[in-house]
Image (cartoon, rainbow, N blue to C red; front, side):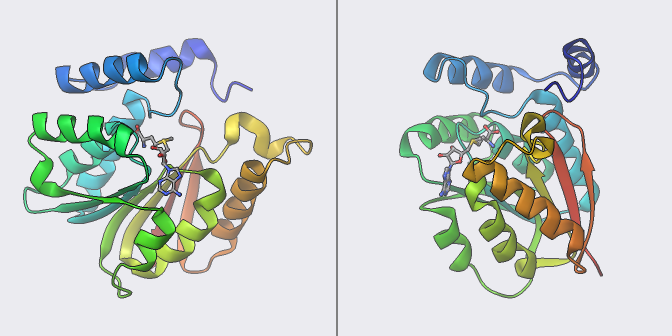
Length: 215
Ligand SMILES: C[S@@+](CC[C@H](N)C(=O)[O-])C[C@H]1O[C@@H](n2cnc3c(N)ncnc32)[C@H](O)[C@@H]1O
């Protein structure tokens, strides 16, 4: 299911601040490494993340799902020079690409890569609220766990962003019952019913939820 028509998707991409050479090269290298991949966020979503980080004034961010680094570059660019992004992934191969682009973008000092299953990384973080911004874009079955680990660590007013919450429309297809489909429906329902959070789901690309911790 197209969430937005392909023609309008192209129009949306053509009408946001253009990607710079670093991000363009990262897209090219990623597609050479993993032909046909749809794992990387698109540029309009990346600009959206940078804008959200700046608008919230975030200083401390967490990302679950780095891949080759597109979203981490976009998030880290929104942070102040002394800000910090804790970036979680399990792939040495893919994050080695990310590291090169963080270096090229002058962001290495801001990014703290944790190579381990994200549930372990998140559980090991301090339990008090210290996170201003978090982005979840990893294995879909893990979303409910990542959400429950992140929300108590979010500061009041902090923003949690979740990608792929529409599963290309499978959320409304009763026959779609893969573990990933079930997990995404579960987390979508959980967020809506969670009194700690104010949330809105946007039809950007594969669906993006913004969930803000109430003050
Ligand atoms: C959709 S990709 C992330 C794309 C990335 N946000 C970007 O903009 O390019 C998902 C990533 O989640 C990682 N991942 C999968 N299972 C994980 C787990 N249990 N813990 C941490 N990362 C995991 C994969 O290695 C992969 O790099």
